[in-house]
Image (cartoon, rainbow, N blue to C red; front, side, top):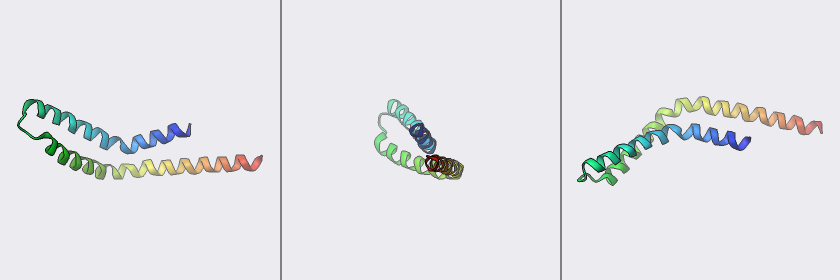
Length: 88
């Protein structure tokens, strides 16, 4: 149960960047097929880095809520585990 929750939190943190870079790669694939003269590797590296950093910066305010909820849930779980071990 805890492992699934950790996976969900990690996915929520990474999802904006992953989605943006996926769309960039799809667009670059279309460009590579339609205009073979363009060096997609150089263009792709620059665009992927630029969009990834931009999306990370734009998603930081929303991550505040996710991290706060994650910490609150972790503290509640720690208190529940501590109270359960104290009773036995």
